[in-house]
Amino acid sequence: MRAALEVTEMSALSTQDLTIRFGGHVAVNAVTCRFEPGTLTAIVGPNGAGKTTYFNLISGQLKASSGTVHLGGQDLSGLSPSARTKAGLGRAFQLTNLFPNLSVLENVRLAVQARLYDGLNLWSIWSDHRDLTERALALLDSVAMADKHDMPVASLPHGDQRKLEVALLMALDPHVYMFDEPTAGMSHDEAPVILNLIRELKKDKRKIILLVEHKMDVVRELADRIIVLTNGSLVADGDPAEVIASPVVQQAYLGVTKEDEVAA
Image (cartoon, rainbow, N blue to C red):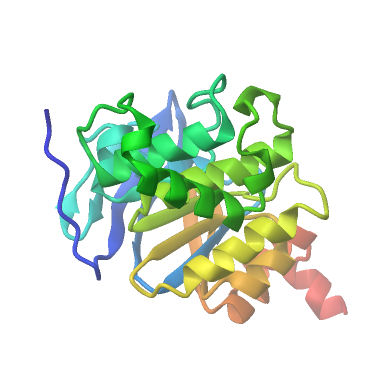
């Protein structure tokens, strides 16, 4: 069994020439980027730009055609998604059906136990681990789901499943938080819970946060940095205000061309 990788508190995440091809189509094209602790980076671009595919390459859901992924100087490129999770990469919204027939509390409690007691029998008697239950309940309270702790996960509406996924991710306490459109499909009343959680996570300057998001108002508020992907290539990287005002973003999101700007 592969040992978990050691990650220092102030480790950077980086991709070098990360590429994936599907037949003759290059979905992500030689993307080289470095993400530092204490920074929330928003990854934006038009539909089909390669944002989620880039996420999948980093977290291991897809195998790169070429290029590498490093965390804290350690090469993760050959590792499975579960091994990358142990190494410190936390991908939200890949855990929806972890245990759909168990209760909300049991799902979070298992994630807490997996994080704190790696290798311990996950089905051991819960009464022997009261601290795990208390931690799980605290996480559920943070996502406004403590009152639904005894409900089976399969019965939850979409918005509650999204909130539960964030609780599961927080239970794993990763070094890198990866959120792929975290409020998609959520109601106007539900979305602020997730956004407030991300704001709280930002306060921990040891962590790296990556956010794929289409809603530019959310990006403006949360991001310390924006990178832009178009046709799988990295075309802009920098301060949010400057990147949002750049021609490449204006064209991608608003259809504004340089000729339009001159005419205006």
